[in-house]
Image 1 (cartoon, helix red, strand yellow):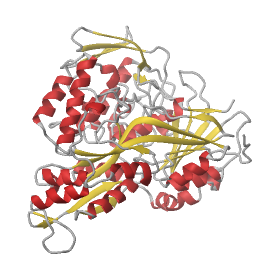
Image 2 (cartoon, helix red, strand yellow):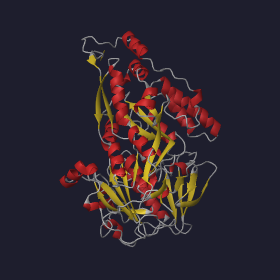
Image 3 (spheres, rainbow, N blue to C red):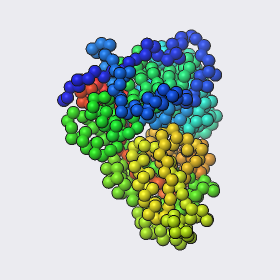
Image 4 (cartoon, rainbow, N blue to C red):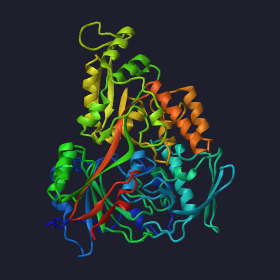
Length: 563
């Protein structure tokens, strides 16, 4: 095992964010806090740093000596999915808050996707599944030293609905905004009364959007929310990185690192080079197969690739008036894409090909589904010709209703999505379909979802972030705020409503299988493939790094020092 010659450390600030210094008895300015929930504007200085960040990770500003021999400081090269860590702002910023070890929820999943009590240690539910009583765990403190109370949980949920309605977090997906929240300080419980029955509310409360924040004392939600996790926010520089430090008030045992330097690195090869140059200790999502093979062959590195429940998927904008509202065009596009080659060759086996919106790793009847659009580019061209979607001016691009087809395809460079996009662009050009490819960042990609400014938008989704696929599959529910595609199918909507009231697991499985088949038959999405996530560590620093199938809590449970 290689011993590292470098001393990896972070120049820590002399104090935490101002919000963390507020006393527990102090009066927080909630209006000020809410106004800080939107992403901050980058300064010219931070943009200049970001421009060259990947080439100079090991710069002096991020190097210092260990404070003591026992202090362990980790540097982690990661993707900047979105700006900041406010769970109410975006789905991705909610994930950031969890992944960085800051935020925790009332419940969480274990590696087998079983629900575990977390900030709630006991709960009960009535027979109608409309009244849920959650006992808040005793002795838990926020990172500012203030006690976690039922009133604090209630305030956090209320703030989420107040601020989150304008972002992409869509808290109504996990808990009805009409739910009544009742605090009993004497019993130390929060009761949630839902207007409609909920099959298992504990699963919804696992999602990072439902992270509990000390709203009384947090002043900057984007950069430094006060939470209960093992780490607390210290420094944040947009597009550059974030430093988190050990939460000295953490309730659940020893926290392994004095601090963690999270360095935003978008390029997979840059991550690999930084790791090999001893500039970082750990990286995630190296998706260049040559880099992966090189690191796997080197005994100095631990490479973990785990099958998961994430999927690469293209959402198709089928709203009325959009180009892809044409049914024939959508089916032709899917027939023209060689998914097997893209997954096994183009991205080096990091994805497994499939034709449904849910991966075959989940037990929802994948083996019983029928694919009406197997790879057949000749058939794709035939059905386009038959529908009169042809190239009339000889420029190589087909026209639809007199307009040349040029699909706006938005994605971002992570988890091979940009590589897929380029392959799709090329394959569609072979059948005369033009694609204007826009490779943005994670925030830009989410913005295009919310504004509906896309024809194709690809991202990588966790298909069972709440323990089953309901939250994920509402992306095609007709009146759902998370339905960015404009898709609306009456049978699908009815089945989704039935699913919300069905408790039998076998019956739920059958309903979800049918919902998948409807989406497949309607060519409602393009499943690029099912993602196998990777994490790579320097053995001298990290004794074993694994990513669990739920893709939760990278820092809090999955990274630990060598013995």
